[in-house]
Length: 113
Length: 138
Image (tube, rainbow over all chains, first blue to last red; front, top):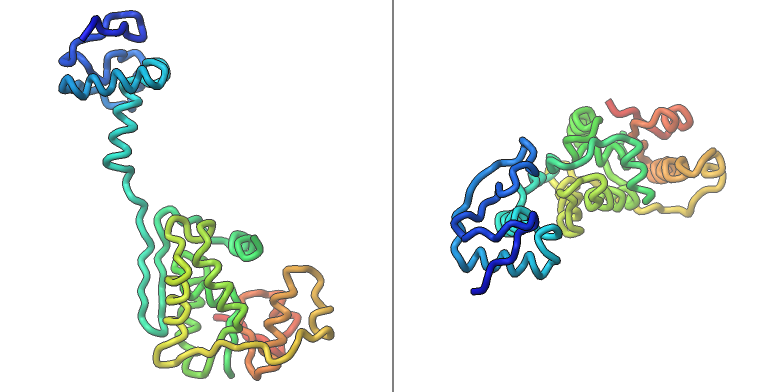
């Protein structure tokens, strides 16, 4: 492998053992978790190539690539599904967690949409 | 007296998060032994609402599930009927509607009148306008 690409700040690409999600801690807000990952060479290479393919680290940072992959793989927490009690003659539906607050205006609007 | 449920009462009885759910559910459970039903329009309105993400969020039902919900409510020890209007819309009634939103309510009043039911509703305007053909829920 040749000389690593310069980083987005012009610094040299670190070896894989130095790749971390907090290379640029100044960018992180306190709500973000700062951590260090030891990535295998092949994974680091995939990330470099993908970043380059997307226009470089300004367009596709390591953080954004890893975050996207984690979300895609493990997903966001599933919304609570509705619970339906199908007792004959007495059905009661407990709406999903993200269901809107029902009002007469909302229901009428839905009937006419 | 047999009750013909309007759209809002029927849907409220089914969905716990509806602001009138507790009242509608309790009232419906109580009146079922006396005879009850819904117009075919109310049947379809309930299916539409149950399938609508704007109403049900991510829990919007498939058409098959929504139909199962409505049919299951209509079954049981005191089954409800699905009433198909026996007559065409009556001009004498419908021309009393003062706005487009009243047309469906008035049509349900006519169906109740023509089939020997009373329309069970929360709607104060309908109750006031048609006291002889309506029932207050609660």
